[in-house]
Structures are given as C-alpha cells and as structure tokens.
Image (cartoon, rainbow, N blue to C red; front, top):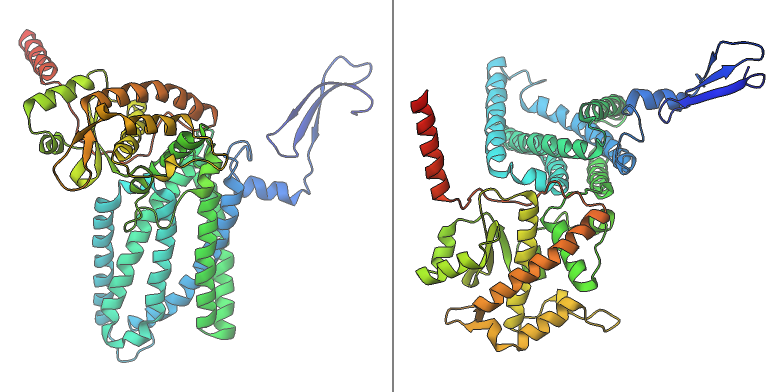
Length: 484
C-alpha cells in the first residue's frame, strides 16, 4: 500500500515503534490510514507497562541510570528483608511451643508503638533537611534499613532482650520509612519533566513491585536450599549499599542546595566559569557532608553561613544603636542584611519580609564573598584564593590581595578569634561588588542549566518586617470592618 500510493503524512506514537501513515492510493480520492506496529516487539510492550508515558522524552536524562541501580538495590533489599523476617517471627514466638499468643501480641504492639514514635520524632527533627539533602538521606535511609535487618537476623543472640532489640530495629525502620519516602518523592519530582509526577511515581511502584516479586521467589529458593545463610545475607547487604550509592550518584539535580551552590561559587571565583549541573553532581559530597569539623562552608569560605537568623544575634555583635543604624542604611536597597559574628565564625544573613528566591540565592553568594574577604584581611589563607596551575591569579583573587593590603578595609578587634573585622567602607564595597557580580553569575547559572526558579538552601523562618506597614494594614482592616 505504501509503495503504491503517495504518503501524505506520517506520525509516530512517542518514541515507540508504533507508526501511522496517511496514504493517498492511486486513482482514489479518500485518504487511507495504514498502521505500522511491531506487535512482537517485547521491549516495546515492557516499556509501555513499566515506563512513564512518553518515555524517554517525558523523564530526565538520568532516569534510566538511576532506575537500573535503584532496581538492583531493591532486589537485594527484598532478599535481605525476607531472610531477616524469618528471625523476627521466631523472636515473637512463632514455632515456640512455650510462647503464648498474648505475649507475642504485646511484643508486636510495643514494637509498632516505638516505630510510630520514632517516625513522628524524626519527621519533626529532620523533615526540613530531606529536600535539601535528598541524596544523602536516600543513602542514609537504606544503610539504616540494612542496620535494622542486621539486628533482626541477630535476634537469636539477644534471646533475653528480644523485645528491646525489635523496638530498636522498628524505630530504625520507621526513620527509613520517613526518609526513604520523602527522598523518593524528591527524586520522582526531579525525573518528571512534563508535570507527570503521578505517572512516574506509579511506574516506579510497578517496577519495584515486579522486582520484589522476583526477589521474593529468589529468597524462598535461597532459604529452601541454603537455609538462613549469613554469607548470602552479608553479601546482599554490601551489594545493597553499593547499588544505592551508584543510584544517587547517577542523579543530576539542577536545583541548588548548599553543597552544590558552594562548589559552583568556588569554581566561579577560582576559574571565572560556571560548571554545569552534571559536573557538580558528580563531585557533590554525599556521605560525609556536614559531619564533624569538615563543614563545607567553613572549609571553602572560612565561616559557617546561616540564613534567616534572628536579629537578636546582630544585637549581640553590634550592641550600639549607631552601629545598627549604619548597617541598616548600608543594606537599605537589599532584601537582606549580611553581617559576621566574628567570635563564632558565623556569617549571618538576616532576611527581610518579601525576599524572593533570587534574593535568597544572592544573599548566600554575598555571604560567601564577605566571608572570604574577611578571612583575607585577617591573613587567613583559603583554597579558593590559591593560584591555578597556570599561575595566573583571577580577578577575585587579585581583588582580595588589594583589600588585604588596604588599611581602610579593617577595624581592630579585642575579642578572641580574628584580629580584624570588616570596616563600614568594606561592607559597602562588598555590597556593591556582590550586586554587580551576581547579575553575570546568575546569567551563567541559567545558561549552564541550573534551575533558578527555586532553591534548596536551609533557611530559618525569622524575617525583618516594617512595623509601620503592618500598622497601616491593621488600620485599613479595621476601617473595612467598620464600613461593613
């Protein structure tokens, strides 16, 4: 039919093998529709069942790599979970003729109760960080799940403390449930590029269900042939952690959180170029970020940066009215105030009400610049200012060198820590520099593929607001009620 007539139009169903041709046959006036589909294409059928509609165009480019490793870790997790379940059932009395149903029920209720409390407390204490550090908590959650299963499979060693051990493992799994569910939602949102969040989530669930079915059958075969093999259990635990690490490493997030933003800023200041999201994601610290003394912000810019601080901290650092009025005047054209707490090595960002996403990102960039320059005037060397292999110092390093030699940039301090604080003139200079540099930096971020419509920086809720505006609004509301 296609060879005999004239093909008027062709269309394809997404990226599948399904095609449709609209043909004008010889000596006929009506258009004939010719369907062209390979029904024997097994891969196409599996794609329609387990992949989101429109795949691969409807998902991010890192979707396949992530799903491969995520599927592998789910397979290992199901096998270890099945092996551990056998010991849990023994722990609550299954197979023990001396155990009573009441004792088993009480153990199970206490275990579940501890899990509920653990879930509530963890959501309260760490819920804010799950979006910002989704990769880290995704990895931590699965590692914690493995630790819980290690406790469960070792229950025969805790015969006199079975209930306590089960409570501990249940609390750990409750944390896994909160962290794993929240970070999975963050990953799904990243992969759904067409607003197809529900479809991607549903297909992800279908993939996991299929994998769990195969893994459960495999686990039953292992138990039948080898019993509760510790060797296989340990091997699956190791593979599970490795596959999880590879899965989160495969994800290329385009939204800026603190470690990614710090790396981008460092590269920009050192090399005067903006790295793309995939370059930064490949080297983003995941496991040991913000642990111990290796704080990334402290390492890169010499200060810890806190966003959304209360002005109470500024009052401690600048108790005099004249000093506060001066700082307020310096940042009058900004939706934030940046000022260092020198004794604590904190760069505090005080945010004004009405600040936008761009203001928050700019304030963090501003805080990094002021932190590095403050370290410079105190002769504190930072890696970001070291010369590149070509020996040519970049513009920012040259600027820091000039400020280091200028007497007007510093004021002596008597307290512990740094000997000098930033002068009023330096604060104004850095404010102007940050304003000018941010515009070109922001353009570079957008051009390299970073999503500037939102951010994942941790920001506390304190905001500076104008009391006069609030008063006028209240008066307007009162007048409106009176008119009614």
